[in-house]
Length: 191
Image (cartoon, rainbow, N blue to C red; front, top):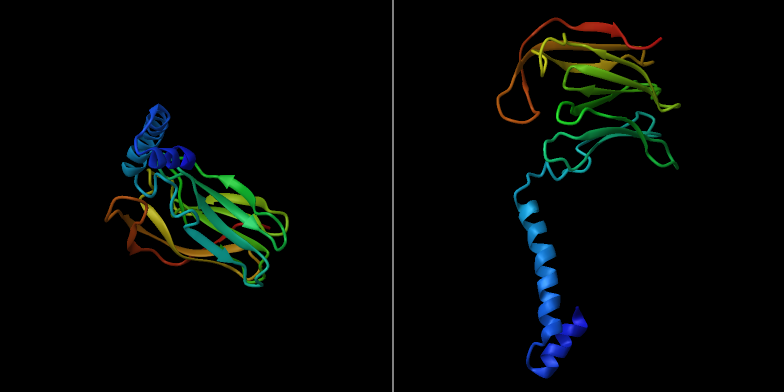
């Protein structure tokens, strides 16, 4: 591109190569700019890593990755061990699943991803394998009528402690607020 522009500047008048090159740029760049300008950050997959959590022993990092999609969310959940490449654990359902919360057991053996504020995907850190997947709130609608708050794992990662609350969708998107909440519950999530 620079050589064509330089030739135009030196000659004092544009030639056919200059106009053809300009037309090529315009036909490629303008449609791309129009597409990008009409997209939300979520549709573009931004922020790239909306949620991450380092294990208590600082040996692992669990994170969620956003991906471009005209109908978000489009997310995957990942786990990375020291000195290794990150490993994708699972692709979440496009346009239906999102993860806003990650919790670790105190011994760093287990990490759990809270999906749709109601479903728990539990992963063994050493093997990077899913050991359980369960609904902590009743699966009665989309999204569920109740949402999970105050989620924590016990020290060895075998049980989850949480409360469920009425879900209030105060604003569009995937940030919901809890209403009336029930008592604290404990559920076994792995043996």
